[in-house]
Image (tube, rainbow, N blue to C red; front, side, top):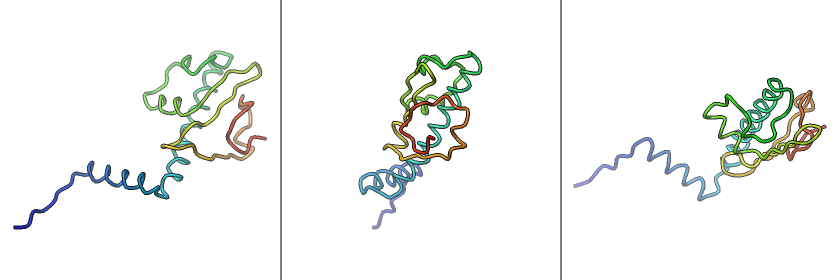
Length: 122
């Protein structure tokens, strides 16, 4: 008698993710870039919004108010340091690894980012 194997969607998803991680799947760099991009831009938006509301950049990311639950993921994916003339913002991780990000000169316009590990900063 043959038994049919049944997998839930969650089990199947977990198996695919695990297989990709174990085999160094080519999806990881793409996922790191996508998540890293979103996390970096979210952090920039929250930091710049704080400056608009308070007239200065936050001393640390814990000072940011009215952040959503998902914003916490972005804020733990970056390293922030308040500087005298702006701030330093580095991307620490994307999905699981550190992405290589770069933005055109227009992205940096009117931002207080003085130092970053993200490429393209004029």
